[in-house]
Image (cartoon, rainbow, N blue to C red):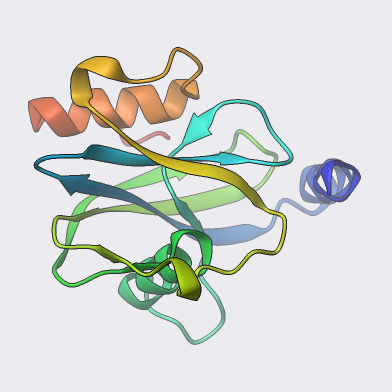
Length: 150
């Protein structure tokens, strides 16, 4: 899977496509915040992924949560919109907050993309958070989204 993502990044650098993506902050008062670890990159991230053709940002967030984590999202709130050119593409990312997600382990797609998922207490976040995930969580907790760049 790692070679595929490496090849994909080279393609993006040449073509510079416009892409749409979503990330979700799933919180639970007792459990904390949900993070995932991918099989093809180091660190912990917010769950999310790409928006498919004909799909809204909201529908994509719900689908990605269900596929990656088996989370059935109830209330979903848009937090902020971001832009990124980090991977060589022009990526527009919608960040959502879900407070009433229900986990159904049987519904999670196990395609080898997600190595692990776990809830972390806010004062016990893992040391190897991706830099962007750390920024988004800090902004979320302070309710101050000051940057438009991912």
